[in-house]
Structure formats: C-alpha cells, structure tokens
Image (tube, rainbow, N blue to C red):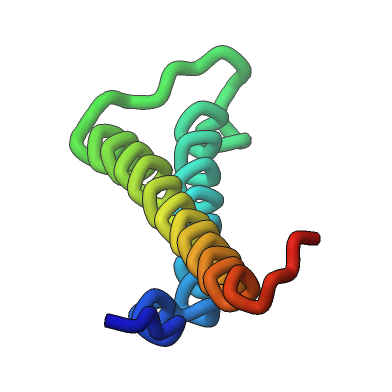
Length: 104
C-alpha cells in the first residue's frame, strides 16, 4: 500500500484551528474579566467593603472559573491541531524526499 499525503492531513483544518485558538482566548479573557470584576466589586462602595454573599456572587465565580478553564482547553486544542498538522506535513515531505535520494 502506498502512502498518500492527503490521508494524514485531510481532517485537520488550519482555519478551524485558528478559530479555536481565538475563541478559547476570548473565553479566557471574559473569565478573567469576571473574576477581577468580582474581586474589585462596585467602585462606589466604601474601601474595604466586602461584597454581599449570595447566588449572583456564586454564579459569577463559577462562570468565571468555567470560562477560564474551558477557554484554556479550547485554545490548547487549537494549538495542538496546528502542531499535528505541521508534523504530518513534515512526515509527508520526508517520505516524499527519501526515495528521491536527497539527504539534506
């Protein structure tokens, strides 16, 4: 069976990997924005005032954590896709060049 370079790179798409990275980083940014917004609170409140505990505070804390972790995973998945595709292209080029007798 002969090796066909299109088999190795057919399912990977550079555009989708870039979109994954962008969406992941945006989700991380929103998660950090929510987390820092929770820590700083309302600027009108007196200095040192503790935010009132309640369901909104818990909801925003959980949402910021989920966005931060999920966005990081999505961004890393896009980066991994880029790495796999470049590795597949390098292997396909190597397989193509070996029978030609090139060593450098």
